[in-house]
Image (cartoon, rainbow, N blue to C red; front, side, top):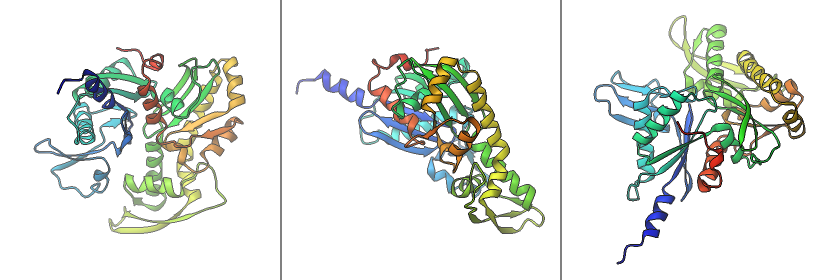
Length: 346
């Protein structure tokens, strides 16, 4: 059979990927199949051999239950790579699983990264993704990708403010004419809210709980404002006085009190971004409101909190957890048309 170069080109193109490499979650989109992977950015490693035992959701069930020779690692910190070798192993595992039914082809990969990434961090991401199996690596800022994922007209001269509250960072960016005009990035986000819940229980109830339970409390009964619907949740942890298991009931407004100070830092960052926005674009934001995305957008009443603080309309993305990877996928599918949205190469 005669070799058809077009078929080879099509298979190469269909293997291309967009990755939202987040502190807490990694999502992967392929041109052929859309979003194909949503996993926790977490791995279990054999301490003696260095072998990767598990990655993603499977690791959650292992938390607090591993023997001494198994290490649980979260290799991304504040939206950037903290452990290059572990991230490389994790991504290689994910990519190979996606391509396991196909002839392995080194894909072209577009990675969404924090807008405030430094040149050194940018180089580290590119090198790590290449080592994980990419033939070419491109970068796009998370706020730009999120805006594309929300179908906002980012190439127009009008300004759009994106607030992306992730696991490790909160990024506030004003986007116009395909670029970021103004941005504020802080390393305060979902993980710090979880920490504040753990600290509250330690101080108020002499009780220690794990990260996974703190996350569940935040999701199930957490609120960014005082709530008339003061829900109650029974939780279990370890008593810090006698070391024995202990159960208590915690209410929504207690979780608000726990998170209040950390939420205040996010509010201050939003106000700072608004105060530094050029007047012409500020008028666009008053008209259109602000657009909220990321996992933090799912916290009850967070839109109400931002509206009370800024007196602006707040619109939550239809699919906050997937806005970034969806937008990166849109850019990837029409890469030449959207090349001006990419970050400059190092």
